[in-house]
Image 1 (cartoon, rainbow, N blue to C red):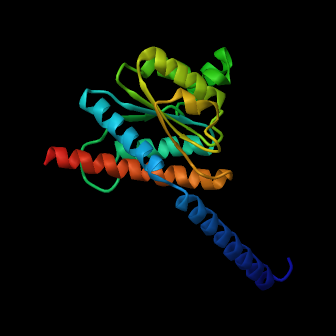
Image 2 (cartoon, rainbow, N blue to C red):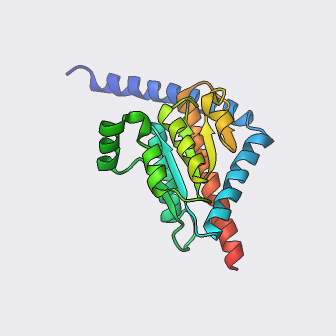
Length: 206
């Protein structure tokens, strides 16, 4: 089986090196976050708070790691983030495999989110699209459907914002060209969004 101790030591060196690269890359990207990025998150929080005040909800979608982020953000809001409080109405459009495969089979993968926005979205709701490239076709179609239904639309994007950037009301564009760093910034900002919303709701209740 080989020298286990040597293998363990090699894995440890690789882990330390990879962690150092990750931390440095994330620090560089976070240092590049400016007021406009924070304004994008606060603008999204304000839009969601308005929707909730009017009986609306937040819909979230994305692919791959961004699908996981969609579910993560929705879970923090429906469950809890830091404080005990009522559940907030948030729904990830990435979780129902029967819907995803039925729509994908009947209409094509580009429409798996748009069809759900048509079915579940209401005027005054908010759609958050998460795309590390900014070019995810099914997210673009979801934005089109949201516009037709009267939803506000925001984005967590990467790169230069891609085709989605001019289509949304506001966007956080993670300042990195590396998908792992973009995803790490997205979920960091997702946590910030949850904390802002939770804090604001507690203040209103108090």
